[in-house]
Length: 105
Length: 234
Length: 91
Image (cartoon, rainbow over all chains, first blue to last red; front, side, top):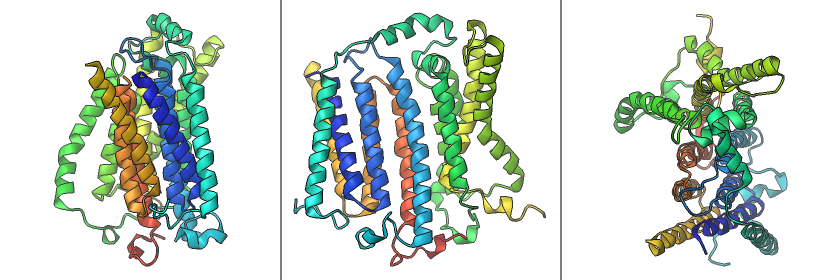
């Protein structure tokens, strides 16, 4: 297979891994890292599926969208981390449900 | 699965089900994408034909700041909203007595790198019209300089408050102002006439660079500095 | 050489998925954050291979750099009380 299709497969695997990490862990920091991995996979899939393997014809529109997506992802991550730290300071636990308190410590 | 030391993970049956779900998602996504035809779309050809009227020479910059400038405006808005959200949790104390001291390596590296930050950022901003670069990359370099300043325990004085808060809002204000001007002038949102396109794009890029360069270190700081709000009246 | 660039892409794609997996299943949080920064740098290389240098610039500085720094700062504040972090409590 050609090189861009390799990256499409890798991106799809990253989306699956991020999804798994999001649901399998309770600690908020791990969930945020899993979300970032998933968004990296989505960006990889976007650009790789539009790339034809040669240098000449590169599609500018997915690159512009991914550029926007990177900045939006870091904004959302920063807000999510600030909320997680605040939640920790207010409730003393680093997860979303009190029932899973012992899982997150 | 016993080689995974996951002391914080879900129970075994749930983990297996989640792995199955993740694998199915990956496979479905890969199958859906690999069955798409590889090659340029007619949208990319349209960008190429419209390039002379966009005011810049680089297709990605043209798409970001002319053809799809609506998305870029909303993105700057999202960044501003994130700063408002993070800063809404209260001020952050920058008292030097409570922070870990800066080592000699960090201090020397910072004093060498800070002037280069503006040089590299200015170059990236200017060259973004013809080569890979532009507002986001330049803003990210300035943000790196800002984070370096925060790490070396720089104490921003209260006089800087109006500049920083104004700079944070500058990108969004400039973009919305330009959008309103184009709406009032020609009735269509965010269309740029070819003769004013390149200068308008440059001004918007400068405003966006300032905004991004201030917003990202503001997100890292996690709140407005305490000496801005508590000891204003001296 | 065609075969050499293809094998470079193959190794890079494999390393991306492997590093993401190791990031998620690492037992220490600090290790997960550091591995995530490494993952971001590998993703930057992938963007270069896909002929998207501006995305590579943004990914290296914003996604790998700034997100990594944000995660490290949040890691410091989310440590358990058994570890000494009283000096980080601003109020």
